[in-house]
Amino acid sequence: MKPYRRIWSAWLAAFLLSLLQSSAPGLSWATTYYVNPSGSDVGPGTHAQPWQTISRAADILVAGDTVLIGAGTYRESIVPANSGASGRYITYAAQEGATVIVDGASINLEEYTGLVYIAYKSYIKVSGLQIRNAGPNPNNAGILVDGSHHITIQGNKTYNTVSSGIGVWSSSEITVEGNEVELACNDGQQECITVAGTSGFTVSGNHVHHNGPGSNGGEGIDAKDGSSNGRISGNHVHDLSRLGIYVDAWDKHTFGITIDKNRVDNCRNDGITLASEMGGLLEDVLVSNNVVSNNLLHGIAVTPNGPVAAPPMRNLTIVNNTLHHNGDGSVPSPWGGGIVVDNPNLESLLIRNNIFSDNLFFQILLDVPVIGLQVDHNLIDGFRGYENEILGASPVTGNPLFVDASAGNYRLQAGSPAIDKGAAGSAPADDYDMIKRPQGAGVDIGAHEYVPGRRSALAGILFLLQQH
Image (cartoon, rainbow, N blue to C red; front, side, top):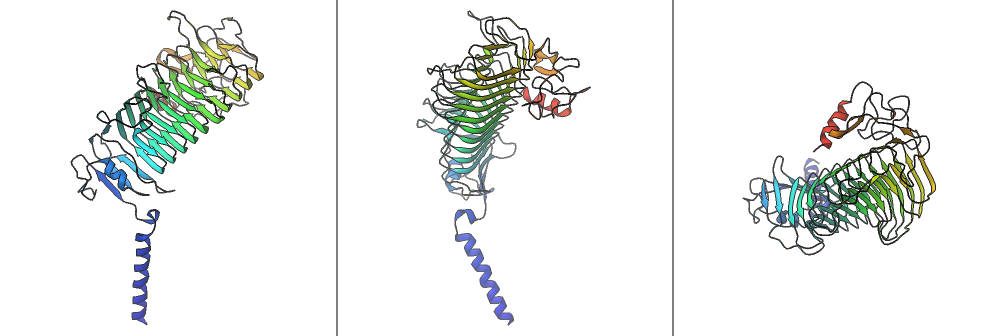
């Protein structure tokens, strides 16, 4: 019997190996490949014999594979040929410590594409690349995701793109995390980070700043045109020629979007705008725990912002934000303030537990009647008495006693009138620094909970990170 057992075992092992090697790509062994400018595309792509171009990897990689890219400048576009699979992402990543530059200065991209272009694919991750000089057409992005799902764009930097640094269109389950976007929208269309017609998205921890000098496009982060069930969180958006964070329904039902824990400052327009330019229903939007300061016009605007005079909006919640020194008195026609509401077709708006401090012409301006309006428990520092400016119910007035507003530190000092004076209903479970609410006898007003006697280590670390 022993020889029979040996033959049977050998046959079974050979059969299983053959099955794994000859079946669909999802069952093949995951492979790590390497790219280096000194390599050769006719080689095997191993560590010892790397490929020369990322494009070679993009043609070869299948589910589960990773390409690690060595330091250098790659003058090419990247268009993945294959999708990954659930639990088996295809990963394009810079080698640890390597500066990997993908430079499109010598490339004429087709319109509606990107220097990294992921179209109708799934389960792909792009990490740690520097994407530069994408153009020349108005809709050429640094990284463009179109018609795809389960895509992660993480830890990249885009610079000098005619359109978006990062654009996502008609996709689902998308993560855009920890990227830096600079000099985007150089007279091209769209926004620095655009998410359009996309469901199940997360845009978090990105640094968006200093867009292009052109006058067409260029808002910071925009979720628009039928996007749904997404979150814009923990981003720092600043020094833009347009507004900072935008949610625009355009002409489609756009809903289920959270804007929280962002810092938006020094934009030459509104800090955060909720709009419906072409009449689509904007619904179920939460704006919470944001710090919005020193923007040219309004801290927050709820407005049509387009040719449709009264687009439908409903169920908007604006709670526990800090809005300071928005509006600019130095321009020829000075204007701006804390929050303005001027859409006459708005139902159910809650404005609660926010700090409105030292904004230019007004703190809360209600230009139109709103069905289902609740404005309460806000701290008002500098009520101007402007026409249609309101205090709301149960207001707290006075200086909020920020730690150091001039340095951008809007945490509360001991003795602030904002401490414990907020309403518990609809207050977020934690604050801008992810500190649990409440810390004292009640919820604090504004984006920050006061931590008695000290600023938590986590708060300090997050504060330093937000200054980059």
